[in-house]
Length: 136
Ligand SMILES: O=C(O)C(=O)C[C@]1(C(=O)O)C=C[C@@H](O)C=C1
Image 1 (cartoon, rainbow, N blue to C red):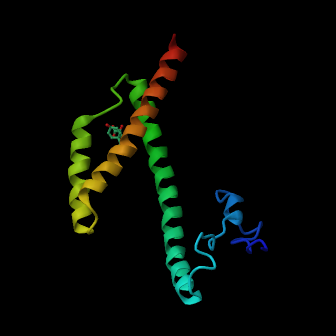
Image 2: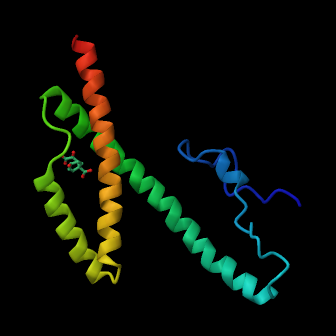
């Protein structure tokens, strides 16, 4: 199979979009050859939205972690605890309400936020350890 056409030419590609974008095959599927062309075309069309959403999620998460990294440094500098259960309770109840309004399962929204926050707390703890080690 020939390589798919690059999404962006080398010159037009922004610095933050890696070359691996070019090696992504949006038509990759274990269903190839087993499904009617028209069904496959419809599937690929829907998948193109999924691919855009997934890329956006990655960029959004990267921005969120950039922000929480700054919180981690601030907390380490002032010897504050990594976790803030009061803040988390407020975030969870807000996200559950937003999820309901958006017809997303609130339990999933809560699990997803908890998953992200537990990773953030791990990062905060690592930053605090590094910070303490640099003072010893
Ligand atoms: O806002 C903070 O204090 C954070 O450390 C960020 C964050 C979050 O990821 O939203 C993470 C841990 C805390 O328990 C609460 C919130």
